[in-house]
Amino acid sequence: MTPLRMLYLALAVWGAIHPMYYFVSWFQENGWNLMAMVDAWHVNAAASGLVWDLTIAAVTLTVWILAEVAARRNWIGLIAIPATFCIGVSCGLPLYLFLRTRPV
Picture 1: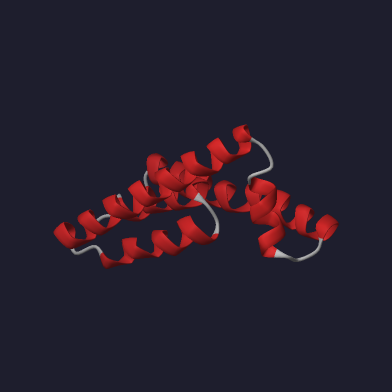
Picture 2: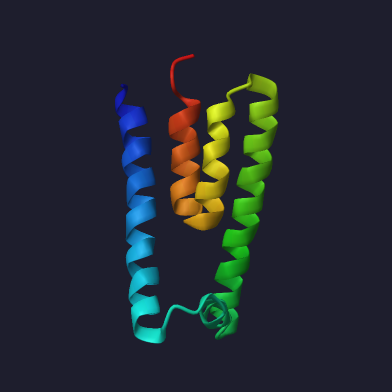
């Protein structure tokens, strides 16, 4: 495995673990209510802006993944879509780059 692929994999793992720490901490303090977390994401204009920024990035990444999978037939890359929406762009993007750069 090349150093670049190892870096992508390390960033994907970090992008999965680090945000999840904060999500789980929030849930433990405020209860396991997903709608309460969504409400917290829109507590002010700055937080709403960040939510929309990440949502647009996630949709853009999904379109890119779908376009590349259709062209390259690298079906394993589709795994990055649920990772993006269930964990975050911080995991989905480096995971897709890791999967995309594997030897074919």
